[in-house]
Image 1: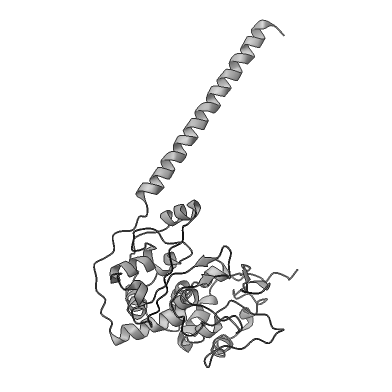
Image 2: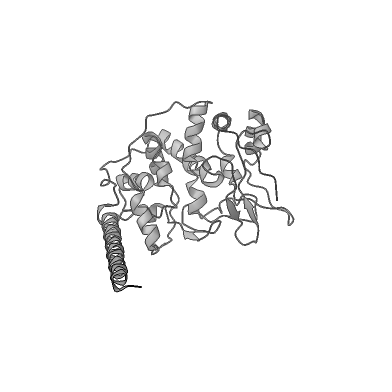
Length: 318
């Protein structure tokens, strides 16, 4: 190989090195700018609104219904008894906070009874529920479905806040856990100011059913397309199972149900409370006893909405 060719290859290598070095520094700079933006510009929520919510009887009753049977706040913020089908809430622990063991990693929910919320303003609670911002201005863990609750109409949010104020007080100091950097960054991206959606007429309609399905977080367990398959584990056991396909495909159990069947199955779990599990029966994380308290009209509306979504055929068991 001649000296000229060798010098040319050396020069080429040097140019490639300079290009790669430039790309590396640009990449580092972009990552730095991105992190700085996330740390300084987010969360994007506005300051908590200055408001006082009047706890009218109508609001309190609507709030009770939402907290206990639709939004299901108590399922995450209370202890659940897994010796009963569907893990109903343990009486006397409503809202005190609990370790959520049905998913990994385990997450500790906060105390939402009056001793914990006593210093919070109504506006701060509204902001936490709908924008995911705590009283200290930090983003809440994105496991809290504030992006979904942001779809609640204003009257329902106010009703929910009013009812939380009336929960039996429980002194249970739940320190806010230190979160990993990925969770902190995700939490800074998601929060947005609450913009109340337009009010929706209640009734046995697909439109109202969609609203209920959204604020009940059905998609969290059953997936964005409601075809199921998300794996859950029953706390204290080795039982694992996938969530069910609830699309209207004829191959699915729900796909073959009439509205009367659908409503009847839910209502069969109404009080006096849950079904005790025989030793051989497999449990579920589906909170049947809570949803059983929904009105027949609301359950019917959910059925009507589920009939409108894209059918997905049930996977064959392996």
